[in-house]
Length: 239
Image 1 (cartoon, rainbow, N blue to C red):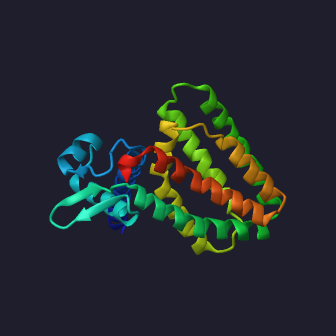
Image 2 (image 1 turned 90 degrees about the horizontal axis):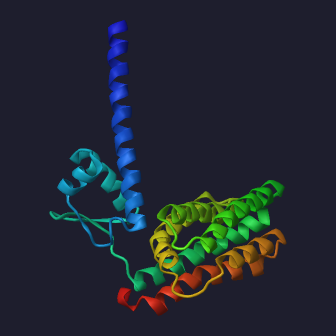
Image 3 (image 1 turned 30 degrees about the horizontal axis):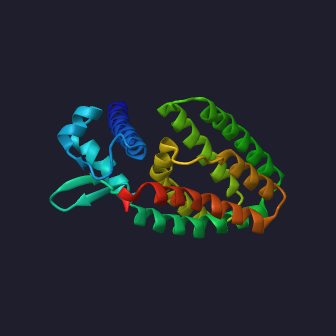
């Protein structure tokens, strides 16, 4: 009996270890795609990936399959995997879809949000403000600082809609927000035109706390549209 229990425990440990490897490979690949370390359109050859990440083909295949489900990687029959392309047309479609979902989520969140939601939102904004101050001061910006901004920006926007009672609306918002990250990073890194993102966030925060649903939703829509407008004017090569 003890021998059987030990064998089961050993098999379970192997399963957990394999899952951990897949999870680590998935997270690292995902981050490298979002940051552009693996650029759009890149052919993801297993030889290159094994050397880069130090894991086997089966682990990589499972991680890549998860990323296909998130539309960050495409799978080509008999041709393997490739980093999903980006384009202005794609970002315009993504932006329109994100607005539909995020504005509805924000509307419901402001209506149903309680004091705890307000407190969490103020905290998320405060943490975001700290990194926005660093962005304004540090020239050139480091990749670590951009990563920190993206994490705190995500936290702020997710907290804004956290009181929305629909889990499906929030789930769809998460997918669309993640897909927008590659484009946001291009805009943040390039700094084509002066943009006071901090003021945009502060205006959205104030309207949400004042429970002014119409104003908050309008400001959020303008905030989302601005990145598309900047890229449309300054990155014609993506069209």
